[in-house]
Image (tube, rainbow, N blue to C red; front, side, top):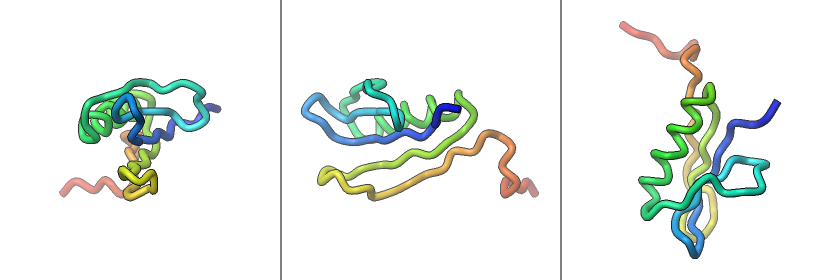
Length: 77
């Protein structure tokens, strides 16, 4: 089963969205926020996963888990 985890990181071409283990980038966007939104859309459409958000220095500064809709912690009250 393929991983549905994505990384958002800065390149010379802009902010990249790349699936973990993929050889190609899914897209380049102008801002980190746009790239994060695109990664979130991809992950959500494919059943959930994790997004690693890298800072300008390349280090991971934040990780976000996107649930697949069956998150047991999703309590509606």
